Length: 76
Image 1: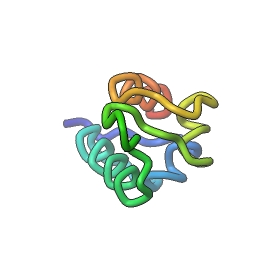
Image 2 (image 1 turned 135 degrees about the vertical axis):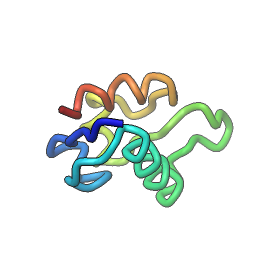
Image 3 (image 1 turned 45 degrees about the vertical axis):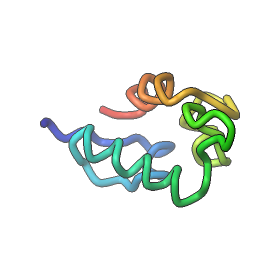
């Protein structure tokens, strides 16, 4: 897979190194799990902390399916 480079907003969550999209997703999920951001009742929803809120376009909660769409706007 071709490496992608996260922008400043996403780099605050996953780091600034260029990595393949699959590795980026793994890092994002590691961050979500480490900080307990997965909704307790509905596991498909991600609750944003301050760093993720920027990536999620200001939304405080997004589904895991919308998350991938929003993250793709922050890579080049």
